[in-house]
Image 1 (tube, rainbow, N blue to C red):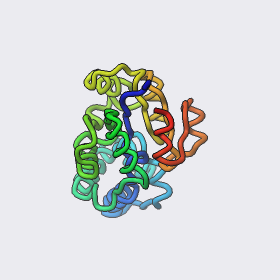
Image 2 (cartoon, rainbow, N blue to C red; image 1 turned 90 degrees about the vertical axis):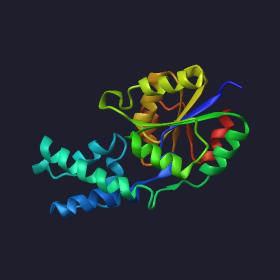
Image 3 (cartoon, rainbow, N blue to C red; image 1 turned 120 degrees about the vertical axis):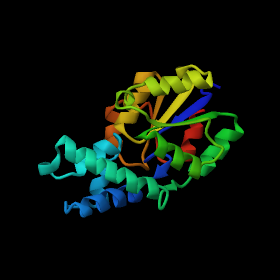
Image 4 (cartoon, helix red, strand yellow; image 1 turned 180 degrees about the vertical axis):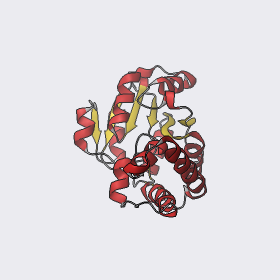
Length: 215
């Protein structure tokens, strides 16, 4: 078997977290008398971490560093308390994880979401499935920087060539390529097929169980 481990993105890949994210940022915006956004608009903001999302969500007149930081901190307080309210695994994900575990494939998560939130969601929704659940610890290591992905491969004891990297965004595909992992794009998440192909996804799947065909 060529692939011995799978590294998953979190938001848009394993879980649909859009409603919890949108509800938190909109509540904070509303408290500041700023315009709120639809789920569709916030969907387009997701992928580069919550601080980046806050920057995009703020009105053009309030994108100074002080406004960004204070809004981000307020959102973190709210989201920390509510990040598992309506966040759920996508259809087919639990079946996929069960099958991968039965085949002794090692599993890990890498997200641009803050590390504490990534762990809270990952370990709450998927207890005992993942060897490593890692979120963003510093802006310097944010995906598509491959350093965290390579760190995970080293910790699990497999070469990067033995990893499938599974994600829903162009940033995920870039991360996989930068780490020299096999890049799999998924179509049930937040980004369109065109973005995944443009970044060089090596495979595109429409349903989680299709990943098994690559093993």
